Amino acid sequence: MINLFNTHIETLSVHRVGNKSRNEAIFLSEQPYNLNDEITPLLKEYFFKPFRDKEENYFQFAHDVDLDYHEMYKYATEIFTNPDNAHEVSKNITKHLFEQSNHPHIKNGEVYVTYLTNVSIDNNVVDAIGVFKSEIKADFLQFEEKDTNLEIILQQGINLNKLDKGCLIFNYKKEEGYKILTIDSNRYDARYWLEHFLSVDAFQDENFKTKKYMKLVQDFAKDVVLPAEDKKEEVMFMNRSVNYFAKNDEFEETNFLNEVLDNPDLIPEFKHYKTEKAPKYSIEDVTNFPIANAAVSDARKKIKNIINLDTNIQIKMDFVNPESAEKFVEKGWDEEKQMYYYLVYFNKEQKS
Image 1 (cartoon, rainbow, N blue to C red):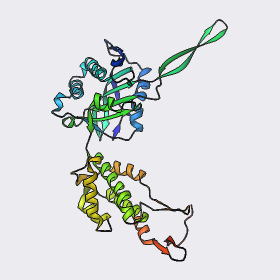
Image 2 (spheres, rainbow, N blue to C red; image 1 turned 90 degrees about the horizontal axis):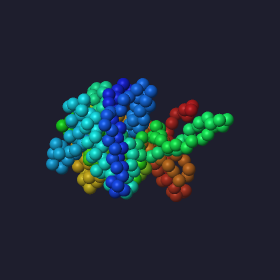
Image 3 (tube, rainbow, N blue to C red; image 1 turned 90 degrees about the vertical axis):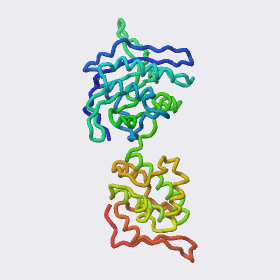
Image 4 (cartoon, rainbow, N blue to C red; image 1 turned 180 degrees about the vertical axis):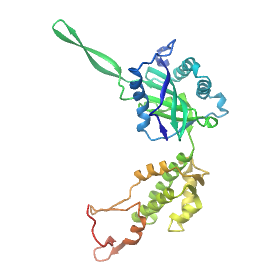
């Protein structure tokens, strides 16, 4: 969980990178940009807004041999160790980005490297590095008085409502490769920013594990529980699963399966499904982990608790009170009509 409300931009360096395959140049500013009270709040909103609006999927620098050989890890460590040298290191960061800018689709643009202080992450106040890139230019009109008329002047510039690419590198969890957030609004070459420039892997903390395991459970419900049982049991299985995550601080797989699977025959099915699908979720050996409440809340919003019937009727289950569906909803088969039915018990209708 991050909070950028009190974050301060200590230094800002602005450079430009071209596309190497088109023989476009790189431009490195000799001095850091001199921030003022007029431009600073605009830049903070431009840089930070995409991260406030985005789901927090963290990454970390990764290298096959050792992090000491990782370019961006090395540059980040240099800045965190000696912030006064941030501008000189920003030139190396921009050169590194330029070296990756050799695909024909990659657009030229301005690069902003910032050293940030008073950043809150996981209830810790740390410093951070922001690397941002603007690529798409927008047309806008300027007006100039000329004699007795207003002249229209067409110009191009950056739309401050949309950041094209960016990352925040937090001075946190250094041994694991720092904790990183990244965005890429123009995914014309998805590997350029994330893999080639940043070279990161998913940060496998409790938030990652909770989110991935709940996605595994959701897919198992759709692929196995629904065909083996019915739609009601799929919804109820997800209902019990969500409530297990919501009421426990620690996840333990055996306990989870015994609690949420009414049909014991589905337990080996789940273990087989997890083994078969695990690489997709990056949780091959995960059986115990602390549960991240924020990830549970996010997952709950995305899980559908509605049974849609082909007679244009919907039955909505309650994730807060799952025992109601267990007690008061029954499924049956009507021989005369040759149709399934749901029988719902209640005492009185609630006022909406």
